[in-house]
Image 1 (tube, rainbow, N blue to C red):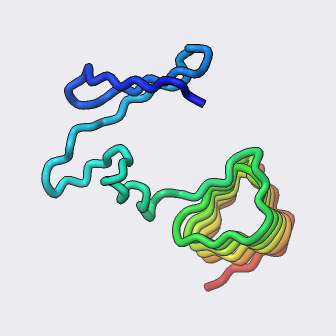
Image 2 (cartoon, rainbow, N blue to C red; image 1 turned 90 degrees about the vertical axis):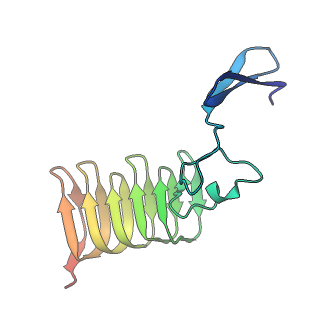
Length: 160
């Protein structure tokens, strides 16, 4: 895909990476901090074969991006962002459904933020519905926040 990759160390604290495509046009440019952290420092570094801890960070969310459609069940220990469509159940600690996101199935989590559409059962500790949210099914929650304009077309149950 990219024919040439050039690395310039013009800056003392980082490297600039320039890539060009087959036509010779600049395709991507980013700055990566290549300065080694101080001993005991938790400064994030660019991923490398010797720095694999960046790729294993538990706070890194899983993303179903638009216009992707996922058929099946999703289980995650961390956060799931849904910008596309999921046809199946989603179980995670935190779930964020964007305005373009749609879930046709069950949602189970501690915290869920909905800006898109959910058709199915939602069971959570905390539910936050934005003005563009549409919930159609059944909801069981402990704490709820509903913005003006949200559409709640379902049975709603509070759990103590």
